[in-house]
Length: 601
Image (cartoon, rainbow, N blue to C red; front, side, top):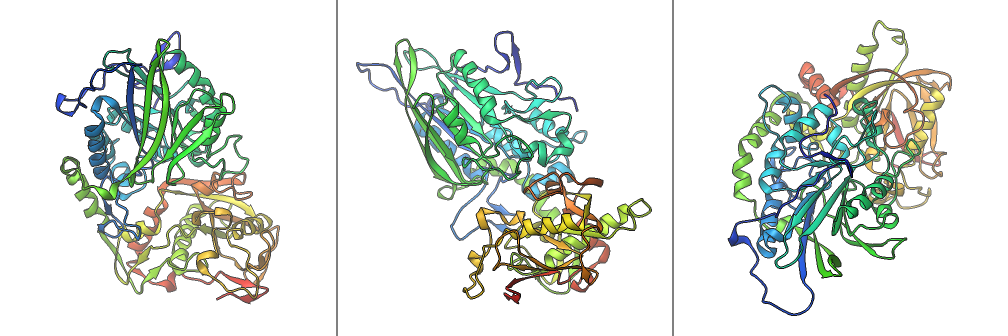
């Protein structure tokens, strides 16, 4: 689909590509805040910018994997239906003409509901449905949404269709057309509020997304879109917004705050750059942070050039929190000045669902519940991921077995058909379970929660050894005589579970008494020490194949084959074809943790 900019993007000879949506954000008179009594002194105006992020297809407080109301030990609640209630409360408190509602991205991927309307009953089909996230966010009245990296998971056509269904712009100042280097999406939006008795207040929202898209969704964006750094593009656009008369500049950034990257040196840009933007780019008042799935009520960062404070906030993902930036302005020297900014969070577990959202989306929700409860086979025993992080678990072997079979079939009859196929898989979830008895799509979906697809790469034994050493850095170094606490054994250097890999088809020990980089012991293939020159066809998910997690060699390895069918779907097909899910058909003991050669468990 052409990368044309859509209805929210206009051009101006003075400013280049941009958007200026002006006019009061008015509400019925009953919702307006009562007029303040006349008083001497400078004119003042109060504005509250509300924000969500990383909604990931959550419209209701419902767990599709468990077929039940969502609950966790912290008592959190999820879903846009709860956010809608919070938003209505804030608008009632502040006055509709004193509020703005934005989001920091990752909207259309992450739940079976999101998957269903991308793949099963796709919004891109002729006469297809309106995406439930578009319906909900339109009804709630979002003013702007920044692009997240997961917006690209289903391809540009799906994203553009979703964009066309939204009553608000999708912002991405650093999502550029690869040929023209002009914005492929609206970079910003400007909203004008009419302050009683004073000049209008202009509020600009600049949207920035994650440069990692170029790696993680390379298959969809390569040659079509490019994603320069957030700091660079903010430095370009913030002065333009100020020159256009913006009194307040808000950045909605799908980028965490801690300055880290998960893709090594594959791109010259920082993945989690929100605080860098605050420090380096003058003229920003507040940043809505996304991507990291963290909870930051308020983070104050000093701009290095001006010495002014920039306020950052990140609401918890899945619509569990709503950020409020309360901004006070004063009219001085002929213009509005930001006097103060304070951020806080509101919790979705304090309010009920908005019945209007429930009514609006109940039919689409019911269709997804029916879909995920389809029975595709029977399991001979219960399989679980509860200890899959530190013990070789059969349930992860299932993923690897499916991937091996698919890639072997793809290689058959070709130049690489004689090479052995090995596979990687990660323990994505700590709570996934396939119970004995009927196996449903939701059981298998809970095992593989991401919409990854399969790729085959050509790797040598030496490269696989380095890959395993890197993966083993996931474990915390533990002395041979130390007590093993499984809750403290993994996630060294904050590495997430999805960046630890099993590799099938080999046998090896991971000696956690040794420092990272020297842990892989007794590495064998077919009962003999691994030959560094041996070639393998390596079955990997597209995230890893494109460099996600910064594992060595795999991103640059020769690609032999790839497909667009999700690994989750391949697992369901494999189970359906078998009819019976029996560990004897896929389970193997490939690795174990040791300390100075002695097994940990």
